[in-house]
Image (tube, rainbow, N blue to C red; front, side, top):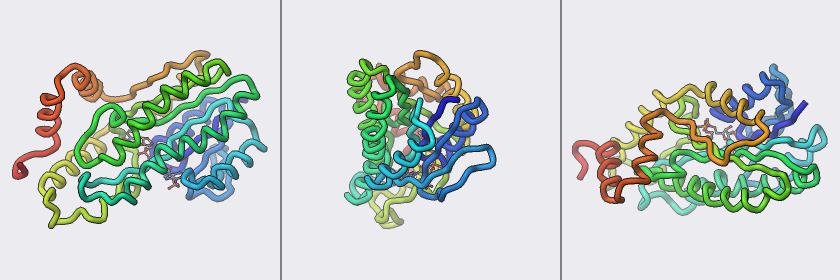
Length: 271
Ligand SMILES: NC(=O)c1ccc[n+]([C@@H]2O[C@H](COP(=O)([O-])OP(=O)(O)OC[C@H]3O[C@@H](n4cnc5c(N)ncnc54)[C@H](OP(=O)(O)O)[C@@H]3O)[C@@H](O)[C@H]2O)c1
């Protein structure tokens, strides 16, 4: 039986991906802060993990390795803070980067030696469409996902000789995430100079996510892909209009892109 370690396995896309892998016969060891030491009904082994804490990452990897070394590592742990660039506190930026990006770095630093010794493995990093283009009031999240994109390119180049493959998953909106991982920046309120634009953009973001794609389908796609001998470097799992948005973002001049995205997210009263 092959073994996969999954971070952020308690909610959203991580939970759905872990479930799909279990159904496909993988042994799944999942980590999240809210896990104790338990085995889920479907057989998923759950261990506590906080990817922002070095000791917690080491302890998770030590204990998971005692159960089974990873054939694959899937990194889904992530948070988002909604707020303007001006009003999002440095500490709020730091928390998002620390979880989404440095969390992956910490996990990989522990897992890479294990995979090298075994002669290979697969590392799946959850980026986002926001790893490819920016949208208003998600700058901390967008910056963290852009960091992941650049980091993954470097990683793939370095680890290929050791038989380790890297895959970036770039999901579009999925109706999976929990609002508790999408707090508003502390300073965002009715008195913000960005209040009207913010309200409009946040409503559009929530609408798109609530009407997003099926997370179970994403889980199954990842499970199928992981079964292949060779996995692609990029796997975009998004609706046709989000594929199109990425495509035109690459093609169009920046000013035109800006106009399109402003019109989409920032409507009516705001300038
Ligand atoms: N949902 C979407 O539409 C969408 C779109 C594009 C990309 N993504 C990406 O997909 C991934 C999952 O997002 P989601 O929205 O589906 O899930 P979510 O419901 O927001 O869940 C976030 C997960 O991350 C875990 N987590 C947060 N901070 C953590 C930490 N410090 N250490 C360990 N685990 C931590 C949470 O578990 P605990 O609280 O128990 O620790 C939870 O399992 C993220 O990387 C996200 O950026 C999602």
